[in-house]
Amino acid sequence: MKLVLTLITVAVFCAAIPRAQDDELAKSIERGKMIYSENCISCHMGTGEGITATFPPLAKSDYLMKTPENAIQAIKFGLIGKVTVNGVSYDNMMPEPGLANEQIADVMNYIMNSWGNSSEKKMITVKMVEAVKPAEEK
Image (cartoon, rainbow, N blue to C red; front, side, top):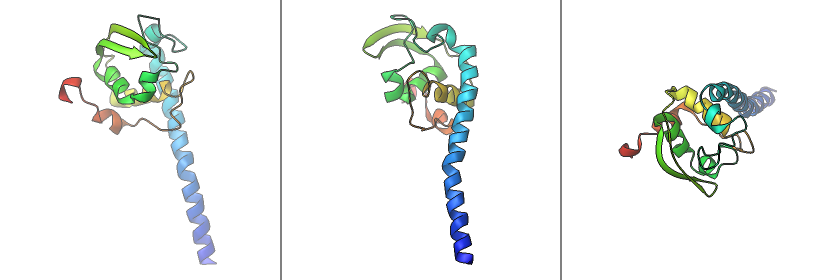
């Protein structure tokens, strides 16, 4: 009987771990939506489509989804110079918005799970943001 109770307890606990991660991702996305509205929407627009040849899209963005660390670096330190997103070159400047690492993780989780983007429930964490260094330190 104790063995059965132990197995049930372990099964319930293990089943709750992914649900807890999903809940944390959902909370991060919700916080990120607010940060996006306050800091990013004027250039990248409400639906993440950007402005062709001026501000790159975040919606269905190959640059964002293939190299999230580059997107983190752009948010964390700003971006000057050429990037190619979905086959279109952009050569503009994105100023550093002055966000904390937690805010960067949240806004990344929001944009990676909006407008046709899907991170397949992989969450950007504060530790991942902390690990990204300025380009010259790579």
